[in-house]
Length: 165
Length: 136
Image (cartoon, rainbow over all chains, first blue to last red; front, side):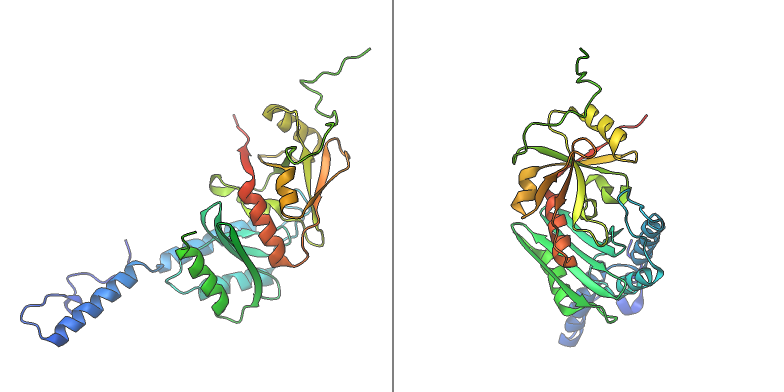
């Protein structure tokens, strides 16, 4: 259940259109669009659940060599950057799956299938390293995180979510 | 003369290394294959390295591959990523066989640019097969 969607019984939310003017019909259309938008957005609970999964994968990655191949532990600074990045994701972007890279960076992945994957890793300096497979095509690059999702990464996530290759 | 016991001794060096040769990467960090699929982290080198450690497992059954890992990897693997030499070469990676320990090889050299490195790891993950160890 999406807790952000107001009850249909709510007076201001009512779409009853008995005897409506054009203004009312326009309002109805607007409310309908808002309802569709809210139904497709990430709830606060989903974001909290992703933060919880992030905490869990970080806890598994605190010892030197945690992967058996000499992996670097996550630092508190990287963890803090990762939390900020998650909080900065707009609500219309689905929550990604967190993981820790062997070099101690934290990765967030959006997965459709083996050939359609997009991931963003954040390092200790707040640099975002993104990489995606779009069927036979791919892309990668680096951007600085400054409290907001960089436009290029937002564009690539949208491309991933809507890609039809 | 002592005969070579193929069922338990997995250390015999394979005689060929071509595109169809099979490699495996032993895994123990469950987040690297969560949800029944391999993730790119399974193929990323450690910090300040441009290679990953693998084993050439041509000619070994799945059970023998687990035994070989138990003997030589240094940890108990809970999963494997099986893939081919040809996949590495398709992405400009070399397979450098050193047989130390037996059947060991390094795959490299990964790009030093992190985004490019992650991209190569994603590609390898997309072509590899996850084999989870049966427990109990």
